[in-house]
Length: 449
Image (tube, rainbow, N blue to C red; front, side, top):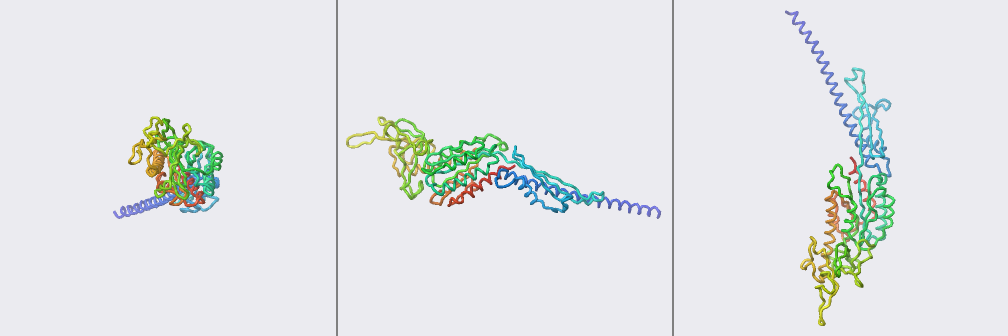
């Protein structure tokens, strides 16, 4: 009986020793696997960070995106991190990167060796780990909409040209695939460069040719610039080309475009407000210093071309039914009788904005002190409507305002943007270059996947 018990004790010791060896082995294996998993995870993060950084700067003229990718990867996983090998000849961490010029992707690969606890029992001291990351810059369509009104003359427009041309050049490397266009505005708005590829030279030539004069037609510039961007609202989000409109202005809206009827003829024209020297246009406190120009400008003209009817100019400052002098109900009557006089029908009065408060849509000779506040508010409202229609189509709108609180309305300009994060303001034109570059980098960051 004692012999049997002794034998059993010996068997138990052997079994325990074997189980202890297995337990220790599994513990060592768990440590190995845990470390390898952590190393693999961190290495993957580092190559992803490198690829994203490179793709974000794939068209940056001042940086090599391949070298930048490797630098970012190394910054996220240094030699010896997580007890990995430090011998550069054996298995210390190393990164490589490449750029595909055809699809604008950056690929980063990383390799590193980790020590093995259980593996070392079998003669394997180091376990190699590899990871790769790929990032791509999505396609983009950008419209620049720039203010060239009279208040931009001198240093302002010179600084704007420098800032805008550098913005355009920031996207030079991808211009064969991306699209960009230019619209500018003063009394009238125009499309200087249609949205398209291979745009850098043409865009910069047109920007440098801009000269400052005239009023500020905010609403038509947004309409014309926005019309260049295709409507992708029906396209699934992951397939939609990202679109941006960069709107710059240094003043208040002082012009608007609409249909007008004069002497029984309907015109598509631009009406502009004029302020006396030293007084900002379309500000509540300055209405008394404003007048509405007695010219209806042609919307696609150069800002000095206006409509005439016979020997008369089409005068939007006079309101009425727009009928001929023989049939109009707007009569100028005095002691000697009634004579017809010039009158212009504003179709804007029949829009969702409604007529001037207290007057019908065909009231004759609405007083200037009633017409000007309506005109100023309408110029803002139409601009906001045009901006909102673009935002409804997923177009992101950046706004840059140049001027002080007496020169620009920050609340109004912010309302045009896609939110406060998309609105920038500066009192001095010397800061425009930095703002345009910041926006360019933000756009690049949003294009990476």
